[in-house]
Length: 483
Image (cartoon, rainbow, N blue to C red; front, top):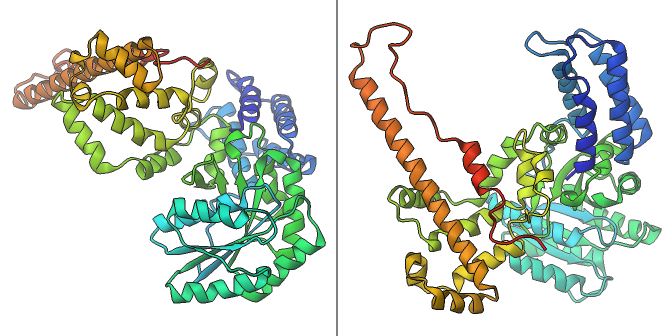
């Protein structure tokens, strides 16, 4: 996400590092590179011009902090201004105090309205709400069926009527919500391949009839500056409350995300980060700015982990690791939990300093739900419970059977078993180190008050394992290479 923009902006600031004192000329050169990076990202030139003026005014002012270098201070200013450009802080949904809260999803055909409606329904359901989806797209073939399918996946009811009047469907859905105690209605409306008067009039009629508390415009981020034009048109006609940017995980430029708020005043409230129903995230401008500048986004990573990984299961696994009872079945369960986090590509971008590591992993599949991981699952699922519990019994004959059952090669089975054994060795190493540290801590506590003060009197604690070295040992040892 935003790889090109992030790389170009970070390169501009690398030139500032090492300067003990920044001159106006240094700042102008850096901002020129930033300007070119933003224009290359398809950000409107007027927005870029205003952004550059704002950064320069602050950078040449009195905002250099004593605990930061001049270059760090300029980067901090750019970070804050990028966040302001995208809206400053996360914008919340308008939730009615008297249910149902009515959310109207609008946008062009192909922007991802139907899927986004289901994603939003699933997210609200996990927040304790009782949402329902409304099929008000009466034009596109199979639109109602598509909403029913994704609604079933999200386990959310879908209201439909066998009429050719979207306004009536929207009106009747309110009665459905009241009758079935649904506190949120998400109305999926029809889109067009291009903006036309008929589309807008129907949306205006629906708005006048149901009086939605929130109008969300769904826009494909991949169309760049055109996304801003679409947002302006819909906002002028309907008064849009917020934007859902889809396909942001595949957007290397980021022009839409950087331009929409400044151009229209409409905040980006949600972003689509993949095809799965769980892949809808609240948009945090400040966190996005940090990711663009290569400073990571640990808060989003923590939130993603908390929502994806079950605490009880994690505690159970810790106990198994401590007792050296970690099996291939446990490994499979952990793999299935970690898959929920999404692509490693995105996760690396959230960890400060690791964004650039993605380039070094060229040729390695970073998709946690990709072909390689599915092969690993297939191999483990082709084993018997006894084989998963004790890999030492898997001889050549069993390996051949497992390979045939999983549709892989015997060499792939061998690689997986070897990797699993290496992982268990590392677990034992960590466990041993942890035990040594605990014993040393007890010795220090028991000798408290008996140790003489002095330079060399402090007992030495065992050093932590070399994490960098361990990661290096693992690097490249995926069971399969990307073809």
